[in-house]
Image 1 (cartoon, helix red, strand yellow):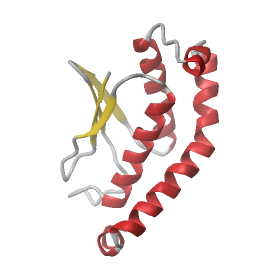
Image 2 (cartoon, one colour):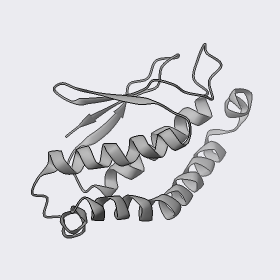
Image 3 (cartoon, helix red, strand yellow):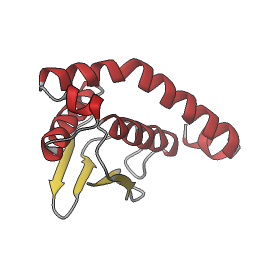
Image 4 (cartoon, helix red, strand yellow):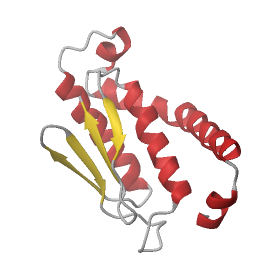
Length: 138
């Protein structure tokens, strides 16, 4: 996969990632909505009238961690001036560096799914070669 990612032209790679993001949203957004419904937060998200952003964010993170755990990935979130989201285990790396295609896929997962919360803010990838990390600024 790393060799594939390095030889694929950027337009094709972008097309692959966009297609992946569309499929991810189609297949996983219902699970996200059900999770938020169980937490009593879906109506706030649907109307855009966010009463408690922190509660929605924490529910989102619990959904995200559960989804990733089902893929065999452990994560950790550190709260500071922003929320740092770290991948503790990343099964598709060669232990020296993160596979670039999978890095793009997980970036897409976080960017897309964060928009579902309707929270104001942004997701920033802060990864290093051997670590996959993101910051949520809300």
